Amino acid sequence: MAFEIDTTGEVRVEQWEDVTSVQNFNEHNRGIGVGRGALALRVLRELNA
Image 1: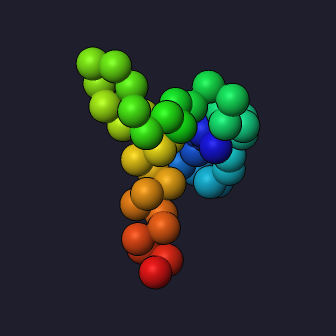
Image 2: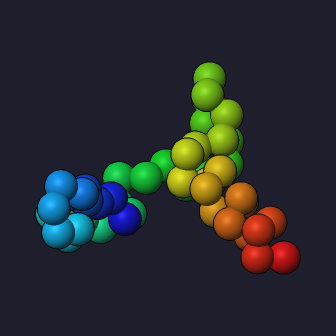
């Protein structure tokens, strides 16, 4: 999820968008290695272990 929060005055979420479809979940990418989505899932799994 991507979001923006307005912290001036009353705190409220300005924008909430599901960005799952644009994330790179590949473990093996030519020239760059692990995609950001795959890396985020790996970190999440380790934090929850």
